Length: 280
Image (cartoon, rainbow, N blue to C red; front, side):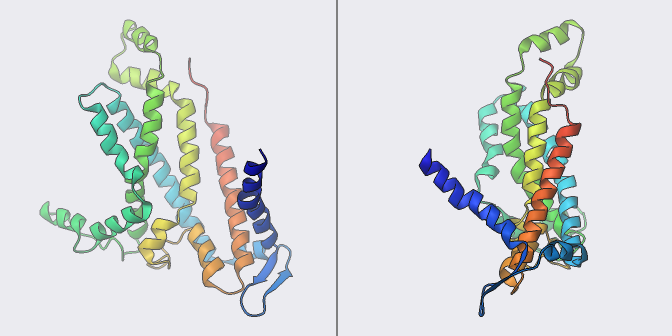
């Protein structure tokens, strides 16, 4: 176990504790490098940072909308594929392709599609609907990222749901049929209750991933979080303070530690109020 433990300590556990250590210091890396202990000043500063508040609100809005949407879409796709339709393997591969594609590549493709003269606005014009400035309107920019991420992440959770659906005993559906249940009643009273453990897992993993939104927001806004901070997320703000500003690396570490606590609390709350036991 020694080689594995060495790698974990060097590249995972060590950096985590060092980041916590930095969060209590004011760090100056360039010029006259210094490391000055400031106690909880970095954490107190978060409460007075207007950009941190904006980033937090954007991130929470993103989590609240994306997690339920991608979970619902993943379940619907999995149930559809599990219904015994022809070409099931083909559609399973097609649906899963976005998950295999690089996030940066997908973001660049969607930027082209979201362009004012791009594919999406062109399709809206064809059907007589109004077009939008997807990348330049502060009211729409974050929604554009949401649409892209739901489309690209739902297939991954679809595969998890599909595996769980195939593990539900057929005897439960046969018993429901004998009781006179139709397809919709089977879905709501047999399928969904027996997917509780998987749904809990999907929601937790979805929350962790959405709280850490960075690359799409960075590429969409060229690292600024614009327009007008509408795509600024907590992780993007941490990046800006860590690598774009001088003397704020310790504050960035404090923000990262605060984000870790936020994710932990949200996960514990979700697990407390969710029922993870299936019915069989």
